[in-house]
Structures are given as structure tokens and as C-alpha cells.
Image (cartoon, rainbow over all chains, first blue to last red; front, side, top):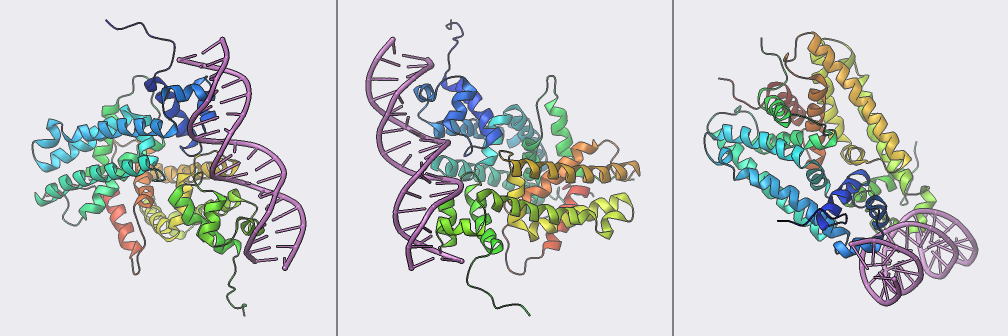
Length: 195
Length: 195
DNA sequence: GTCTATATTACGATAGAC
DNA sequence: GTCTATCGTAATATAGAC
């Protein structure tokens, strides 16, 4: 079987510590000194596990992107009526965002100063385009309001979804599915009472 | 009248340059060297106009907050049916956000590393609470869907509004009111076609 | 108001012992 | 795998000339 749990860091366990600090202080606002304090080991020990700060960022945003892109290949995203696929992708995106909260949070805050950051931005744009295509198909089916601009709708929809990282804090027994439903309901049916 | 336009920097004109760089590189990712290159003057000349990097940030977020809070005191925000006041505040918030785009962008990216940043976060929370109170009143009037959680709705609504800073780029002759209408329409009536 | 030059501190990363 | 010590660089900020 596997060896017993070791009391030392791996790149993965170190990553979970680093990501927390990155989120609290911002990536650029975090020094290796900050990371070493948070991990309880020296700066040079960190370099034993990873090549540097940027590798930690790369691992974090990759994990987030993998989770998001995987949604687009799920059966609910590739079969059925377009509007239902959009709703499915929206709901699942919320669930991935909440399930991988720290990693997606970091992804959404990337600005583009390094090669890693620019790569992450590029992949995010790719994801957005694929969702925009889904919305376009739903509009062509006549299932979205005729007066909405699809590019704008996509941006507002994912602006709303992504804003979850700004305030959501996980708590035991939290029902991500319920929150995802609320988001989808607001996006597709709006806030207004319909008497 | 006033004196002729001087070919030198004031704190205000320097601010407009600095804010652009802050947005592109992030506040922590921007050095005084970056600012001096962008402004076309030396680092030490910048210190002649402002006390340092943080004063520039303070001026920027103050300007954004002043604009946003002013909306809450406009007649449309204090008179009439609550749901209409919420729609008014939403629409006007979008307009202020677009009109003061770089300053609001910076405000929304503040993380809390310095005293200035923590103050900005606190004032943002205050703004959010005042809007949440408006939504609460609209719900009490029965003008919002009965099944929505007000705190959640406020967060999603302003998550959607605030996400505009992530992609909107001003262009000549742009109609902010039209974009504001689209945002309000999506938030209150949703994306779905109603046959 | 702007400059060059520099003080001082903090940062990312490495060397080498244990 | 972790440490202390340190290198080289880049950061904020100041001094003082023009």
C-alpha cells in the first residue's frame, strides 16, 4: 500500500499553505519570508520543494483551470438543449469554484505580470469563449430573451458567479448545490417578484 | 479666471497616471520606478508631489468611495418605492463605476495589507450594508421574489455590477446609461425568455 | 520642480553544514 | 529535509545640487 503520512512537506501540502497566504496578502504582496513563516520552515527549505514562488502560483492556477475545463466535458454540458447545458455549466462552475475555492480565487486575481499569469489569463479567456458559444446556441434556440447581447450576458453571468470568491467562506456541512441553484435562479429568472 | 494649464504635475494629474499603472500591474506589483517611467519624471520628483505610493492609493480609493456614497443621497435613492430605489441605486452605481472606472477598479482590488487598504475595505462594507437595507425593504414590500435570501441577492447583484471593471474599456460616445439598463434588466428580470 | 546620487531595507535565490 | 549565512538585486525613500 502507501507509506504512512509523513510529517514533512510535499509540493502539494506546501501549496495549500502558500495559497492561503497568497489570497490574504495578494501574490505580489507575499514574500518568501511570509511563506516560510506561515509554513513554519525556513525560506531555503521551501526551495527544496519548489523552484520558487512562481511554481506555487502555476500549480494553484492549473488546479483551478483543470477543474473548470473538466466541467465543459461532462455529459450535462455536451448533451441536451443549449439553454439547459448553459444552466448545467453555470451550476457546476459554481460547485467547482466553491469546492476548489482558494485555487479559483487565486486564478481570478491574476493580473499578467509574469509568464505564468499571462498563460492563466489566456486559458481563462478560452473558458469564457466556450461558455459564450453555449449561450449563443441557447439564444439561437429562442430560449434567452431576444434583447440581450450574448457577449455582455456571458460576462455578467460569470461576473456574478466569480464574485462568490470575494465573500464565500466554507463551513462544515455547507450545501454547495443549494447556493449554485440560487445563483442559477437569479441569473436566469431575476430578482423581481412575478405576480 | 484660472491660470493657464501648466506643463507640470499636480497630485491630481500624477494620480491619473499612477492609477493606470496600479491597474495594469497591481498596487503591490508597482514600484516607484514603474511610476516614474510612466510619468516621465524621476522617482524623487514623485516624492515632491506626494508622500509616497500609499498616498496615491488613498486619493484613488477616496475618489471612488465619494462617488459611490453620493449615489445613496440622490433623490432617486431616498424617495419612492423601495424596489425602484434599489433599481435606481444599481443603475447609478453602474454609471459611477463606468464614469470613475480606474478609481473604482482600484477600490475593488484592495486587499487589506496597509491601513489605507483596510479603511477602504471598511467603507466598502458600509456601502454594501446600506444597499442591503434597501433590498430588505423591497423584499418587505413583496416586490422581490419571496424565496431569495437578501444578503445573498445583494452580494450577487453587486458582484455582477462590480465585475464590469474586469472587462469594460471606455470608448468615445459610449452610452453608460444603456449598459446600466442592461445590467439592471438582467439582475431583476433574468436571462430567460418568457413566452 | 526636477534631477543625480545614495542610504537603507527587503526580496528572491543559493551555498553548504548537519 | 531542514537549517544558518549570505549573495546580488531591486525596493522605498532621502539629500542636496541646479
